[in-house]
Amino acid sequence: MSSGHVALTSPEALHVTGIRKSFGALEVLKGIDLTAMQGDVIAIIGGSGSGKSTFLRCLNFLEHPSAGTVRINGEEIALARDGHGNLAPSSGAQLRRIRSRLAMVFQGFNLWTHMTLLENVIEAPVRVLGLERKDAVWQAEALLDRVGLGHKIHEYPSFLSGGQQQRAAIARALAVDPHAMLFDEPTSALDPELVGEVLKVIRGLAEEGRTLVLVTHEMGFARDVANQVVFLHNGRIEEQGPPAELFGRPKSERLGRFLGNF
Ligand code: ADP
Ligand code: MG
Image (cartoon, rainbow, N blue to C red; front, side, top):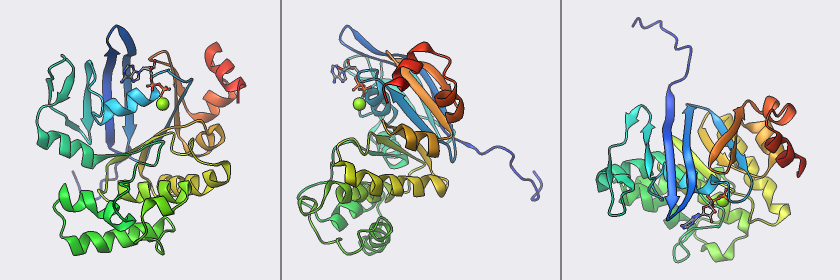
């Protein structure tokens, strides 16, 4: 290709097909396909129990799907059957690759409570990526500063508000320089007055072109920040499209009803 070539489409960041998951007799995910191009912000919405968290957890193998394929930045993840017949990364090295490429931020504040914010943020770069400690510290200081916690780096999580903890969790997720970030209702455990400061950080990530897959009940935020919205119902994608269409002219009656509740 000539050096003057300009790519017209951004490369694929994440591509999954046919994701299924059962817990015993309960089939929670019934075959989900999703593609995120680099820079996409995909909001996943849906009622409680529709499978949103399970789907996110299958993407980074916190949950082993019963079936499906996962490709991250064009690279197919090699999978093997685990002892229960579900799909697991074929090796520890594969799992570490996945975890450093897809960073997840959860609903609860799941920082390590026995570590300061700085220690939380340097942990994965040092242990998983093999970064030199001083480089990891330098990077962590910059990341914590970026989420507005430059003055709290030596604090322990329990001394911080929920919003501060969640911002620190985002800094920790950023520290592995992930290809895509997965957020599972990152603001739903927060007091209302703390939601804004966390959404602001996530909006900043979207604006700098990061690839985000975000489960959220913040419909206004999804409409504003996402370029694609996926409505899950009963383990299937019921409707998918740009936010203006999904929120403005929902085709599915179920989606219309769901949105009517907000
Ligand atoms: P959502 O995040 O959309 O609320 P979840 O993915 O958490 O939905 O759950 C979907 C369904 O799967 C629910 O019926 C839930 O009870 C069930 N489920 C989730 N995790 C487990 C588990 N580890 N074992 C058994 N059932 C589970
Ligand atoms: Mg959930």
